[in-house]
Amino acid sequence: MALALQTFPTVRDANAALKAAGTRYLGGGTLVVRAANEGDVLVSSLVRSTDPALSGIAVADGRARIGASVTMAAIARHPELGAIAKAARAVGGPAIRNMATVGGNLFAPAPYGDFAVTLLALDATVSTDDGELPIGDFLAKRDDNHAIVTSVSFALPKAESFRFLKVSRVKPKGVSVLSIAAALEQAGDGAVSSARIALGCMADRPMRARAAEKALIGKRLDRDGIAAALAAAGEGTSPITDPIASAWYRAEVLPVHLGRLLLT
Amino acid sequence: MAKVPVQFTLNGSEKAEFVEGGTTLLHALRDKIGDTSPKGGCHQGTCGACSVIIDGELKLSCLTLAETCGGTDIRTTSGLAEAGVLHPLQRAFLDAFATQCGFCTPGMIMAAKVLLDHTPNPSRDEVVEALSGNICRCTGYEPIIQAVLTAARANSQNAA
Image (cartoon, rainbow over all chains, first blue to last red; front, side):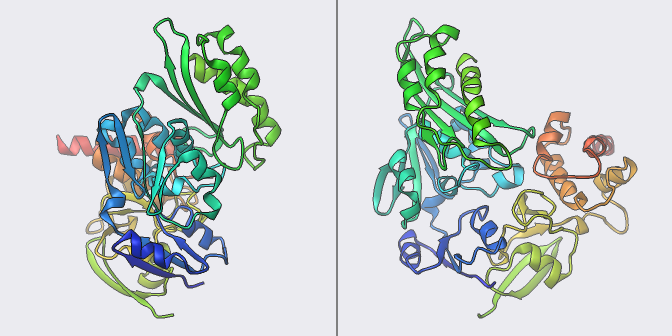
């Protein structure tokens, strides 16, 4: 089926064109061209913007702002984003990483969207022309979103306080059984003072493991200290079932992998 | 729907085509221009058989719209041999029996070429990582990995 692609120099004009029925935004193409190739008749025309504001990475005063068109490969090789490079490298193979964008990852349905899991753990802010939203709120409402994401921003974690794990059956590149990102602050005696843990594949989109986060506060990251968090890890989850793993399997292995991540 | 003009450089030659809106680069290369070296496997970005190099970066031609490639430099496996002499990667793939049915080979070779362009002496792990987006159902991968390592050694000997 023929797809009309309209290219606009500014996000504002692209946003206006995006209001037409059946229109999707074209980022790297790994979601929307794939949908078209699969015969998704809901996609009849595409809009994209070449606005340079979408493709910049800026790091200042401990915060990073990443344009929505920035690819996973660009994040993985950026010298100031080393703390989260591992999460960007976990997405796809090399060709996918040269195409897949930060903006697109926010919309990727499970089992995809591993980088959005990281952004959720970092409590990122998502920017559109309509304003800014905390990523949790953005993800909850993403199906109704009609404004092009322009950038995401977050406080850059120290390398030692950010942990990321993607579990897949095929190494080194495979689709997620699940992914976990954790931003943990520890006091001088090793007790956890703040914890944000985000899970991929444990619902239809990335979610916080709030019960596990709460159970970690004040605890040390040893086997006894994390026991309560592991017991609570599955609270509120509704994992997907797909050809990679069943919901039952994902629920069974989540505490095991969370334990490994917390003890590393 | 009106067709869209697109111009790019393919393996060093200027190409100009009119394509329908939404035409993938894979379709344009194979069915319009006649370069059948990139293969259409999954059309989902999973198998890597359609991999090409666009402006020095490995991309999947099945998920790239042709009309977004205006002014780019596109390289495919069909442009690797020079004056009838195979590229070292092609030679190594043949010698190592790294190609059986051959369907994945052009994608594998483009992924390997990008690796060797940036990392002339890769480790085995780097080869595995570079090929991780390309699926082969025949070889079990080991002959392919060995072929890429052999080509890297051949390149460095030629350069010495």
